[in-house]
Image 1 (cartoon, rainbow, N blue to C red):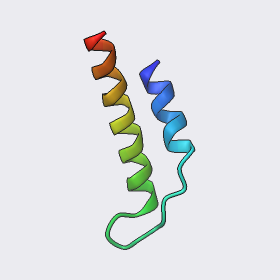
Image 2: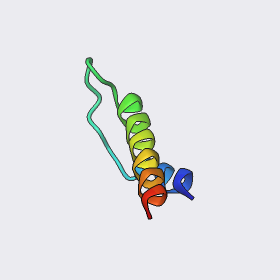
Image 3: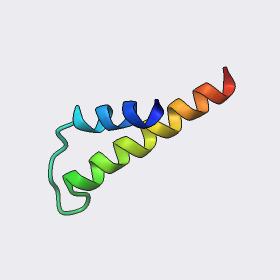
Amino acid sequence: SAADAAEKAADGTSPPDESVAGAPYRQHLARVLTRRALENAAARA
């Protein structure tokens, strides 16, 4: 599912932990953007 793929995408990242956008936020962003991209692609198919 898109949610499973999004989780794997976030797990596969090792973003730097910066004061502006920490690693947890960047991993969350990877999840959200991956899920949205896959759902949009599926809707267009």
